[in-house]
Image 1 (cartoon, rainbow, N blue to C red):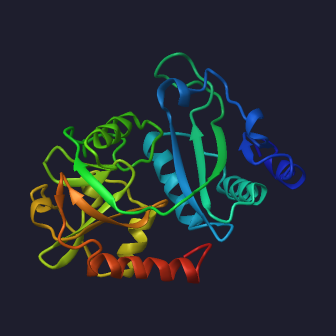
Image 2: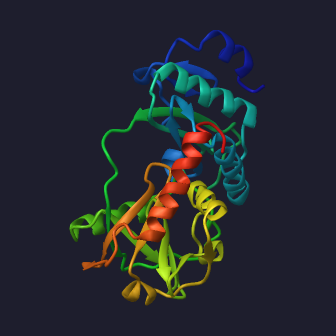
Length: 289
């Protein structure tokens, strides 16, 4: 009980809607050290959790992935009980019916370099509302490959510079998402999404070995649709008739164009089937599917 978090959660829930290191605070009062290793080096992991019907959706799955990410990068973790109670406390305090919750764990205060210090990790939980429909995705392939051999491949880290640059590139091309291929030239993932596409009349998504993130929504679609995980070369984008993206905030998002080529089907039957399956999960299990 590093922060005495159980006592804090019981008595300070109404103080504010942001959780930082054991305390619920107002957003303006929620600060971290300028020496925090997350700020200095991008040393940290995070999860984005959808708020649906006033509850964090699939929270257990997200916390399990957060723990896996922390293990991959050798980062200390607070207890999952602390994070679970903090997440629910923030959702209760913010009062959002729909929105997104961000859970961040960093290396904590450290020296001005790559080496970590001996401090406890910094823990932050915050939320924001989501507005408007997701719409369709116009995607382009980023000109820079993502390394499936990286020591952080598969970890959801806060080191997002390459994603920021790739998304900026996509926007400059009139698109709203960029797709990465890996060093082998195979499809990997988007800057904030997983990719599904029609190949030979079936639904395919890149396997985790491609270097993509094990998306929570991706996993739910795999469990509830007839989808194949298969190594898929970038060339498959040229012939696919339909595709969609998945993520916590997108759900199932149809793709309308790839590198300027309009797809024949948007949404197509495979996309509609996945969207309907996901909608059933959300409506039947707004908390933990």
